Amino acid sequence: MNHNPLRAGLVPLHILYHAAKEEIYGQGMIDELRRHGYKIGPGTLYPMLHRLEERGYLRVREERDGRVMRRYYRATPPGRAALKSVLPQVRELFEELIQHQAPHRRHK
Image (cartoon, rainbow, N blue to C red; front, side, top):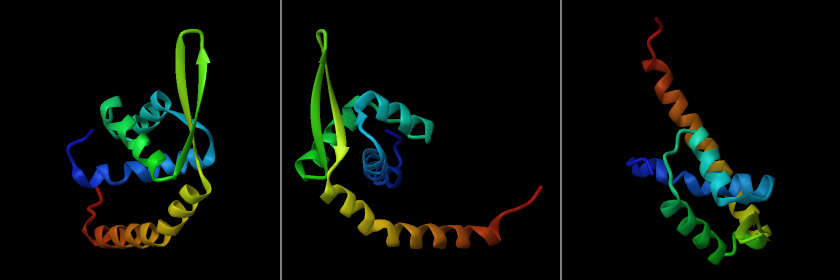
């Protein structure tokens, strides 16, 4: 995981967002997060997925393909509600961050 602790707090939001849209699995989520600039490995992601599951935000189903067992995660109704409940704060923070940065931008 990137060493910025502020970025780490955004990962559960990303996970819930994607799990609300479609079923996810660990390596697929690692790849998705990396596309967004997060440097996250299995040692960080899987405990996070398990915590979200324990809190009731994700449900899991297991599927065996030969000798390989894959766990698929999907947002539960409480997980979707939790994500929806933080949207006003996320939107407000995003707008404040963007407005605060705008005057300091330099155009080349």
